[in-house]
Amino acid sequence: MQSFVKVSHAFVEYTLSVGAFARLSGKQAAKHSVLRDITLSVNQGSHITVFGKPASGKTSLLRLLTGAIVPSKGEVYVNGRLPIQNPQAAAGYVSSEEFEGGPDTARESLGAFIKTHAIKSGEARLAEVAGRCGISTALDRPLKTLSSTERLGVNLARAIISDAPLLLLDDVADEMGTEQVSRLLDTFGQGRTVIITTRLPRVAQELSLPIVLLHRGTLAHYGTCEDIATAVTCPRLLDAWVEGLRYDILQKIRKHPGTLEVRLLSTDQFSGQKLRIKLNSSHYLPSMYDLLSQTDLVRVQEVPPTLIDILARM
Image (cartoon, rainbow, N blue to C red; front, side, top):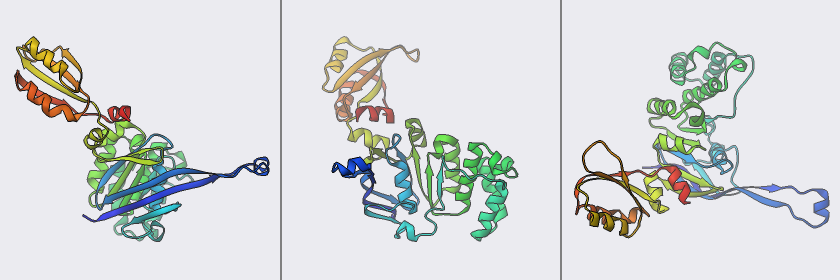
């Protein structure tokens, strides 16, 4: 599959100015890195989540892809071209913090966009997208009177109507909710490359997409939650339902290499015991399964690691 977004060893830096007195004393202006040595490839039509705490560089990464900022070092290509040379690069960018105001209604604003960009079947397209974005009742009201959620919906509708092949949703799911964003992706995201940033672990988890994990301006990990949990040797949880658990087997489980904790959990599902076993990492799963097979095992289930578990390990 062809890479649609390709970032190679990209840096974003700016110089912190110093005052006149500091300059006289010989102090030099310092460079501050927003993004450091970012290398990332996203295939055409793929959807990913970029997670990071505030000031981790999420917005700067998206602005690199729109051409709004240029890397201090490294290369950035969207569909084989520099973003600044691609007129559609910025059309799909939507920020939860940037809103259009003014006396025009939402319908007038979106209608002007449709006319300027010569979008075919614009009125029908507007009606469909507005309904999906939840702004149908807000179309004939002035933008300045809309709530922040409604104005975000207008911005999102504009990006969808544009048919931009790259959608960049900057903390949009944090404001609109993951269910609505997932429905929009199912309807309008097919064939488009979509990058969604979030500062909330819950949102990244609920979107169920591959995750780019940014940490202090660097790309710490990229993959599924399971991939990242394995990479950082995140503790793993197993729930095992056992009939007639013997004391000697319980002791073996507790002394098994990599076992951090074993707890007996109450259950009314059957007459045996339910164990919750915490292992140091996935490395110990196969041998633990072998040990559990020596019991009257009814069922065993892995408890998937969460992003919060991963962050606690880093």
